[in-house]
Length: 94
Picture (cartoon, rainbow, N blue to C red):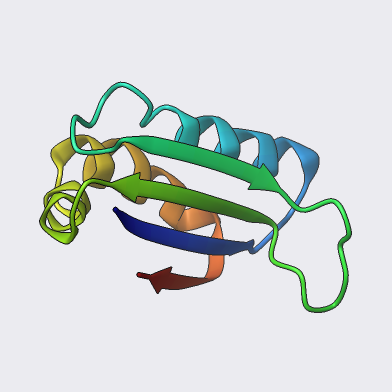
């Protein structure tokens, strides 16, 4: 199992923007065959260290993650759509 975690900090973390990004991330479910599990979470603590939204994705193997990373749906319908909303992101892959 290969796990890919991303934390997102939005430029303007309004409820509307957070909801839009959350919905866009969730749209990957069922649209990318390599993606075996997708969890999307919105921060509730809102501390100085907090990021606004996080995802946990799981794949059978690293190669499947690499295919997902360049998948047309992921690139065109997710990355490009949420990109303008992002201030920063961090990843962890294992």
